[in-house]
Image (tube, rainbow, N blue to C red):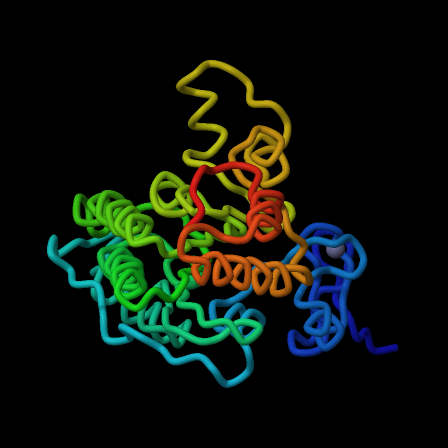
Length: 304
Ligand SMILES: [Zn+2]
């Protein structure tokens, strides 16, 4: 009899058509792709939140057909003429653009979410690990600046492997630049919502991602600065289990809420409505709005 499925090294079928079935990276069960998409790419068997591409995230969050891309022409330069493993950075960038059909590791623009105007930037881990090169930093910065000008609330959806080593100091400078931009946004009284997705690490965690007025994360997302092995080598201490998970960060007051993917859009819509109500009451939101916003955002200290 002809074998339809080969067995991989785990003894599980491996030659499954990619477009029909997808294996959950956590429970190793197969899911019918159409069903997985209906579940917003959350495994129906174990609840694992699979990574989303930036355009999938935009589709999931925004009202259909409302997205208008901004700053799409910004590209990283190669100021250092960097070569890594025999490959020029410029060539690596071209390869990533072709593979991902994205100009850079973040896509940004404006749209509406549950009929509320919002500006957002979404990182795509498939593009060089969503490392924060000068183009990503510049896009985030311009989003924040434009929002400060037109008062449209900002939502930044982070995922990142950290700095982009190919750009050296130019990559590291993006931390200071994005932090200054979201600080000016705060001074202008415009809300900034930060959503951390799997994985958010390095310079992104250590800059704009951790500075939202409300900081949300998806269940099970890896969130940290350095990897656990590096931390253990430096501190000579073993990290507690799950120390870099969204749930651990919530327990320790670093983020405001862990939100299952299906609940994200309604919650963000509610936050945007609450902040809009707050803005309308120029000298502070009505008491019930303020209390509800504070209940959602258990940390932080600022309301617009
Ligand atoms: Zn699963």
